[in-house]
Figure 1: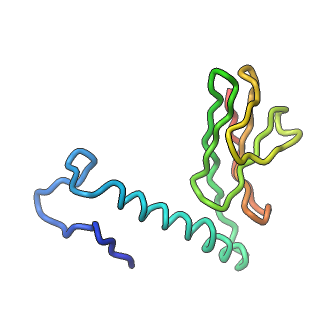
Figure 2 (figure 1 turned 30 degrees about the horizontal axis):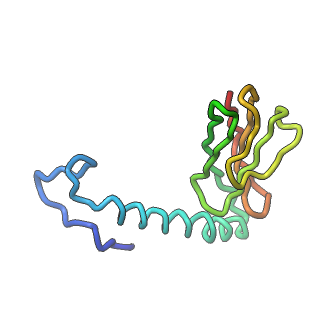
Figure 3 (figure 1 turned 180 degrees about the vertical axis):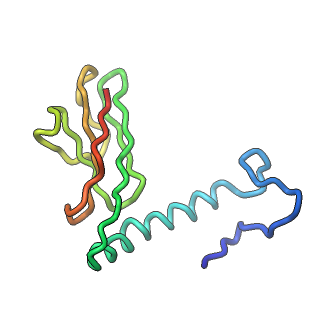
Amino acid sequence: WHRASWELNWSPGVTFNAATGLVPKDELAADYNGFVTKLGCHEMFKMKQLGINYRVPPPGGKVDGSGILTANSELPCTAIVYSTDAGNTWSEYSEPVGVGADKVVSLKSVTSDGALMSRVVVIN
């Protein structure tokens, strides 16, 4: 198990939450990013090689007022694809892209080998 340099010993009566400021948020975020990168880019690939099917988390996304789609994924090394025609065709998402302000957009995450996909998320 990994004990982070920012991790504090347990103390009775001390509350650890966002308001107390006892944990440096930047170091916590860096540790979490390292964890999900290792999980998404290495460990899930190993699980697939062992024949273990796992859940691929769906991406998050939004279309702003000017019709620009922005999307993100919980796990690094999973691709995001989007569709503006109810899933008939899919395009790979790599950066914010114009889709039109009145479009319904479908998003899903796909593993790097294309074998597993998340559920489809629809953005109105």
